Amino acid sequence: MYTPSTLSHLTSPRNLGSGPEPTYEGAVGTPGGGPYVVLKVYVSEGIVLKATYECNGCTATIASASALCELIVNKSVDEAMNIQPEDINTVLGGLPDGKGHAPVMATQALRNALVGGEGKT
Image (cartoon, rainbow, N blue to C red):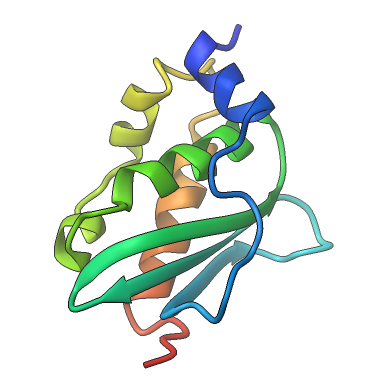
């Protein structure tokens, strides 16, 4: 059973879609080939100003990507890098058994973006 917070992120996703050219972009999974998360991070002077995502997957995957975008805004890049899957799980009020992969995918997309990913600057 999903929590109200998880369902809220599913039915009213935050920061879904793409925007202007991001500072960094990272992905996990393959678009068109199963579950995936593509995260776009917009940074200025070392601070995350905005984050958007595109994804395909289960309720937990969509909610995890949405929650991650909210978690990293207004944080330094270093602070964003310290976000763990457990932090997303806490924001979502816990995920059902077997759904632990979802916050892992979201945080891995973030790390792929910020650590040698596809930095645009």
